[in-house]
Image 1 (spheres, rainbow, N blue to C red):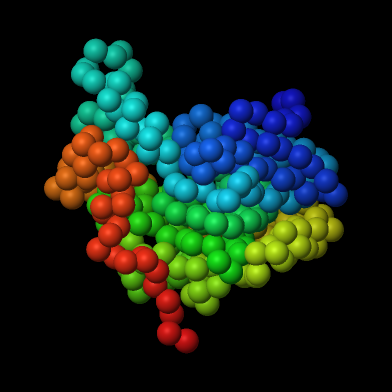
Image 2 (tube, one colour):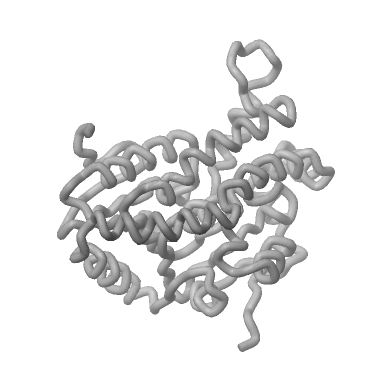
Length: 292
């Protein structure tokens, strides 16, 4: 079903010992999620799901970070270029419904690991923030380096997670603790609260991920699919799909707040990086540390 992918502009793809390795490969942008990267990622993940010689999938990021979020640099450039209502196609930067429509289109791409038959392990190192967490939490397992930084700082001024799997991983109180502050947790603390299944020293991350992937790869792929899908159906019965749909609309609603307008004004005046620095300064190092 389709041609074997080896590499594309933003994603690399290899197979060894029945384990497909799909790598976000745009380290210059810290593997930020643009429409183009996500489209290529979906193609690679579907290819891995199609291949009879693959039983498990590892999703990782090239360079110092797993994923630094959605690619806001390209997003703001696109918004500026879209301008008025001359385009015959929806742009996603007009009405509330246009915004929700755009977010739902992104959801279809980001949700791909969840919808596959084969299990996907997110191998998280460095920063896994904002959209990076949307992608990681749709995987079946997240294994992190102890010093990884995981969270959604954008909730301080820019919106709300448009996929919102947080509740299903850490429960309501920790979901609120992280999202109402925008604070991040280390990989080791993420393991304590159930946000990731395990954390290990950075030099052990590759071994830990490969060990789990190869253990699963010894199991009949159709049995793996059976057990993955019943858990995912249980998540859907518990409302995960409906919450994701509502989350996109809530994110669109959040984009209408004064905080988002102020942030966009700062972006226009000083650029995204400086605006984000100004947003985050009142929060110090922005890290929450469980007391146990």
